Amino acid sequence: MRCAPACYGEKMSGTAAIQSKNMQVPTKLPQHVSIIMDGNGRWAKERGKERIQGHFEGVNSVRAVMGAAVEWKIPYVSFFAFSEENWGRPEAEVNGLMELIGRAMVREMDTFRKYDVRFVVLGNRARLSDEINADIDRAMENTAGNKGLTMILFLSYSGQWDILQAAEKMAHDLMNNPGHRVRPEDLTRHLVTAGIPDPDLLIRTSGEKRISNYLLWQTAYTEFVFTETLWPDFREEAFLAALEEYASRDRRFGKIK
Ligand code: FPP
Image 1 (spheres, rainbow, N blue to C red):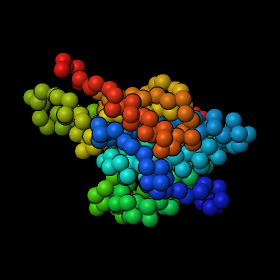
Image 2 (cartoon, helix red, strand yellow):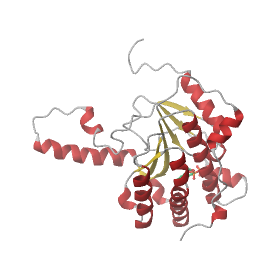
Image 3 (tube, helix red, strand yellow):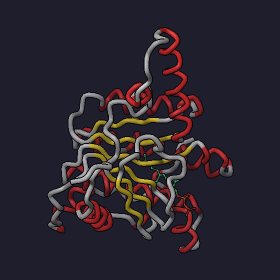
Image 4 (tube, protein in one colour):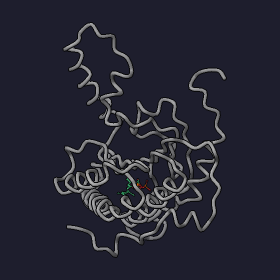
């Protein structure tokens, strides 16, 4: 069953919002920004609403960040939408979230087309329903040739799951090539993120300061920005503030400059 349009939230365009505000972005921008969207439930609770209403409003923040990334020409933006651990939430919330995500993907197809966005879903898709997998396949196939922003949704994803599935494949390769000395690249190429640059910047909202089994391997040299802002309140200004914080960082990758 699909959610009625009224519960989905209002459509807005991040690009239009930015153009009207004439925001100035730093010259040193990340190639890949990844976001742990947190605080939807608390946002809803503060307003006496159901938790799912926080997730609905969170979709508008995804749109705002996506629009800003298009406008500011950031090539990759990714969102941690649902972790392997999130399957342990109450059934009603899991179903509501899946429905919301499936519906958002279908609904955003016009936006992806308009802004040349390539849409990618990564995670343990074997745990997703046939219905949402069909929506994902359609969205990914329809946008595969787009050359602008790559927008990645991590769904039913965990960093440990990703490393384990990559290690299994690497072990299989090694059986056919026993003398091979294993290097980091041997694992990297089997991660679901193969071909995608590691995040330069990881933002986590809502004041929590942990990685929560997200991109464990890929964040070896990522810059972290933590903000107290709850995800549904995270819009263009908050995104810009995180980019400014990133621009002020001195990245040395373990070397001396
Ligand atoms: C964390 O808040 C947020 C989530 C588990 C889900 C976020 C997913 C979306 C906004 C959907 C995006 C999808 C598309 C296709 C645009 P929480 O529930 O952990 O909040 P809390 O910590 O306050 O309880």
